[in-house]
Length: 264
Image 1 (cartoon, rainbow, N blue to C red):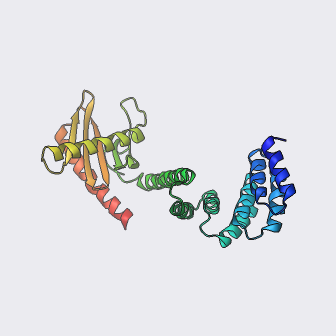
Image 2 (tube, helix red, strand yellow):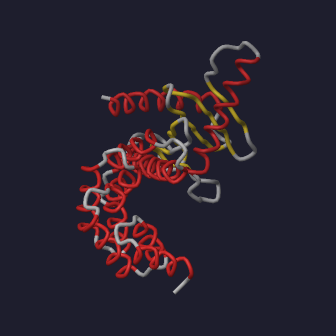
């Protein structure tokens, strides 16, 4: 038995009504002595049945043990006692995340952040859930956008639609060697578009309409078919730049139609 657990056990023996049971149960939980932690906190709840901290701690012990249904009951009891209890809100957010309810998880975490904006664990959890929500959104858009350019010449390897954050929305892009480079290039063109906007603004050129790149092995044409999207067209060196620009305009019209349908 470590010194801190020995001291807390002695304190609780001297005064059974002491709230030291919370620190003792938490110390046992952190040492993964879950049965002992549960025994301590349940004994404390018999004396302090309306203490939200105790119900929250019991829920965390249950969650550590894999008993999520029982943990949910304990967190719901804690929430009924104190709807602004940060630990409880984090716990309910965790359960929502496990259920795949990202909106519910975000709601709970944002409520927790409103109670304590300095809680780093809440900030980190919010970032994790938001990143997962963005990932799922991107996957959904990608699945919906795989046939955006069906029928276009080179749709399988040379037409890419991305959003301003660099996430692929549709189309496909392959290197000269045949490798799939869509995700990497989407991130790069998002940065290129930002630089183009910044440069055009500094030079008082107005809004940019296209970036054309002529390389030894082919041509690239980057445009913005909608405020929230970027379109990259890649063609072999044998294709004249004018034809690439014409294809880009046709593809942009198709992309705009698809984007409008997604908004609707």
